[in-house]
Length: 118
Image (cartoon, rainbow, N blue to C red; front, side, top):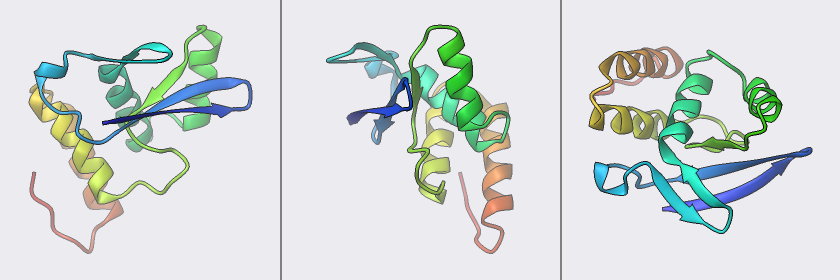
């Protein structure tokens, strides 16, 4: 797993990359900034990937609340099948199947020429 800390204007946000499945991790990863909420990172990515909120809106929301923004994907790159599948895998682990269904629907819409199984 990798933690990347980035700056977007005056806002600091963190990126949690790869291999974050299983309850053994609990919901936190410790790095130089303190605790990063992995659950929140995946929830934020879910919201962005399913177009419930834009990354810029998320930054504003977190900034207004005095929070840093964490994501489970890189918002500077195009969302790929693997990114969506990683988010689905995370929510399957916690039996949040409604979110999985929304993500699967988004994956099918975005990559309609391919077939996927979760």
